[in-house]
Length: 309
Ligand SMILES: [Zn+2]
Image 1 (cartoon, rainbow, N blue to C red):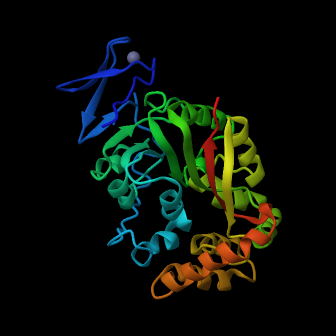
Image 2 (image 1 turned 45 degrees about the vertical axis):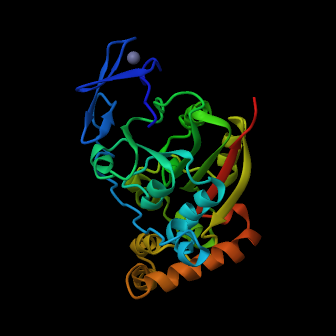
């Protein structure tokens, strides 16, 4: 199991009966319910805010058992599976309730601000309550991949380069980043509402969810490249009028002629519509979206590789 380092001075920690301690600065980091706690204070916004867990476990790695990994969460678990071999050491940033499949396939380290989210994730080997924007408290060259879903858009642009620098530090040569995140969008449906009522757009799409890091797809890719990564693949999704039901729920609040339609469309997130609609959207994302402009995407799934020094 990977041992954390001190987030203040990056020295190795030694384990004692109450937790981990740093011989360099003398700080103590308690281990509670299996979670290494490195925060001085809980985070008021994120503590307990996101506890969603991806529960699906395939019966085997055969494609006919594993394909739902392609369907769920924008294909994020499927893409991680494709680019990161089994047995690898993987850190998930902003892991919330975690991905059960990752716990089965990898040596997982979950990193999140929320103690309550981490507490329930016994299926990850290591769980660390830490602020990745300050330090990802793991040793240099110690992991094969850094992954995240819906984490990156919560990071203010000024802090993103630091997180990439930390990711690069902990990754082994050739290590991968797989990030799925929302982006600032020029989607033809959403931009009508965005430009007609910018304050409401900000309230619903940005402030309500703590989305302080909305940037355009290509702005994000430039950050990865500036940090010494090569972009291996990026897949913009939800470029058409077909949107996640949660986006329709937000659009219904703009109070226009479309709001009854959006209120109806937001029901696509419930049974019996959820699986057929999700499958249809994934097909559109896979077959049609690659031909549409990058700026129309509402989210991007990005795979990067750490380039040699
Ligand atoms: Zn220390």
